[in-house]
Every structure is written in C-alpha cells, then in structure tokens.
Length: 249
Ligand code: 9D3
Image (cartoon, rainbow, N blue to C red; front, side, top):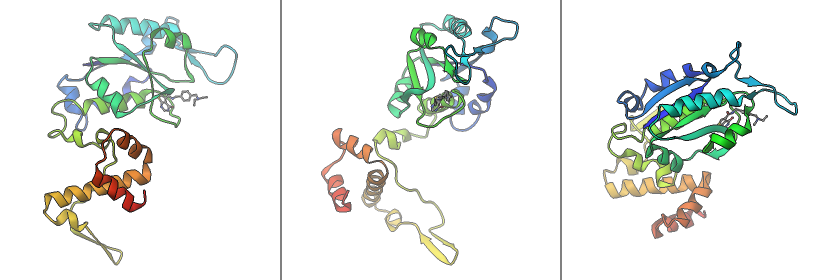
C-alpha cells in the first residue's frame, strides 16, 4: 500500500519512518510513503499557501488551488484514485476499526492542515474521510497522520511477533490489565510490592482467568462504554457477567 502525505512540514515525518518496530513495514516497502511539500504547488512569487478568511476572524485559511494542484500531482502517480483523508478537529474520531480498514486497503492521500483549516470547497470536492484524534487541540494534521501511519504499519505481516495484535485491547474491545516483570518482589521506601501470585502459579487457566478479570475490572471502571459495546456484541460470557456482578459493576 502507498500513503502520499501532503504537508508544509515533511521533515517531521523522517525519524518516525526509520525507528522502532514499524520501521520494517516502511523499509520493506510494505507501506510506501511519499512526502509532498504543499509549498511546491503554490503559484505566486512568495509561495503562499494561505490567506485571510472571508467574513473576517482570526487566523488564516489554506488556499484551494495549491491543494488541488498537489492532489492532481499525487493522483497522477497512483494506479487508481485513492481515498483522500483530511485530518481535522471536526472529523470522525480515529479508532481501531478504521485503522484496520486502511491497513487492508491500497493506502490513501493524507492531507495535513495547518492554520485554522482548509477552504471548505476543497473538502466538499475532494475529501473522502475527515479524521480527528480526539477532543483536544493540536497545531496541525502531521501528528495525526503519523498516528494513522504507525497504527497501520504495526498491523502489517511480520511487524509484530506472532499474531500479538489479535490480543490488542481495542481488537478484543476491552482494556488490557497490568503487566509485571522482574523482580518478583520490589523493595522500595521500606515497603514491598510482590508480583500478583496468580502470575507466578504456572497454571495456564488460572493466569488466563486472572488476566480476564483484571481486564474486565479496569474496563468497567474506566471505560463503561466499552463494556456496554462488548455486551451488545455478545463478547461477554456468563463467567464475565458473574465477575462484574460481584464487583457491583
Ligand atoms: C478556532 C477553532 N479551532 C478548532 C478547535 C481551530 C483549529 C484548531 C486547531 C483548527 C485546526 C487546528 C489544528 N488541528 C488539526 O489540524 C487536527 C486535530 C486537532 O487539533 N485535534 C485532534 N485531531 C486533529 S486532526 C487535525
């Protein structure tokens, strides 16, 4: 698959594509990335890509024409016309279901906005997906684009050991419980914190049950919405329901 990224800050992407477990997906070409400097598609002497908003108000708006020229150049290099993603605070919240759709597809054109946003006429004509990371304010779409690329890259074959992402919390629809490693007992500040006994028992079924219960408890306390969704999807069994009832949740 191929992602074409249109941005005023292509330098922000370099290090993320060459580090960590997702590097393999990018270096192998499983996930091809091409960066496009929007300013190269400006037509005036000053390479302007923004202007003041009609109707007044603070900030600047990204101009339609450089975006249209950039998109035309990108689509000309692609086999078929690709999905066009605009990262925007007013978009649909990114979730693992949408990540899986992109991971299974041919890639997309990712438009990273800066300033107050882009001219609505470009969105109306060309954008197929408007995506937000959540209800907080960033200064542009580059970090959201990197978040999508990272989430897609780690789902590619060979990036993770075995099928470990089938256990990812959002694939299962529940949060994951706590993890422990050495030492077996941590001594600090005059106290001692042992690793939970179930994890040292060596009994597969006991360990699995303990993990399931921690996962259910954490999810019920922090994300009751996910418990409701798991219930509706029939993903909670009688033992899960009995455990939650015992917690009074
Ligand atoms: C004045 C109103 N602002 C909306 C809250 C304008 C505005 C703020 C920040 C317009 C664009 C931006 C830049 N943000 C993004 O480009 C962005 C974003 C975000 O800020 N939060 C969560 N997800 C995203 S995706 C793109």
